[in-house]
Image (cartoon, rainbow, N blue to C red; front, side):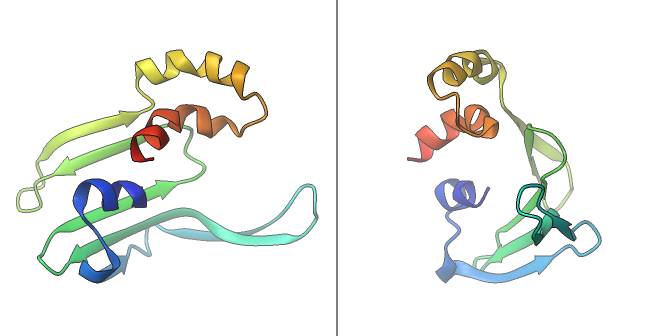
Length: 122
């Protein structure tokens, strides 16, 4: 998500005016690792808004326990009207997953669904 903000929306460290966390949506948990037995603390849900110095606003929300798909929604900030919606993985990506699994069987499964995005951003 952050790479997309940088690549397509021009967000940089130098042009960020403020970052606001959505504490009602966000959730941080401490869980015990199944193999190590050690405690790990991390966000399972996170939402924040970045406002750039020129007034552009971008909201990022992530739910790490919400499945393997992602949805990007672009809205008009003045009206709240949805302008566009993008889903990942799309049908072409889903169709390519078996070949990627055969080629890179030991990779984490989410890499297969994100393969086209990594190639584009690379």
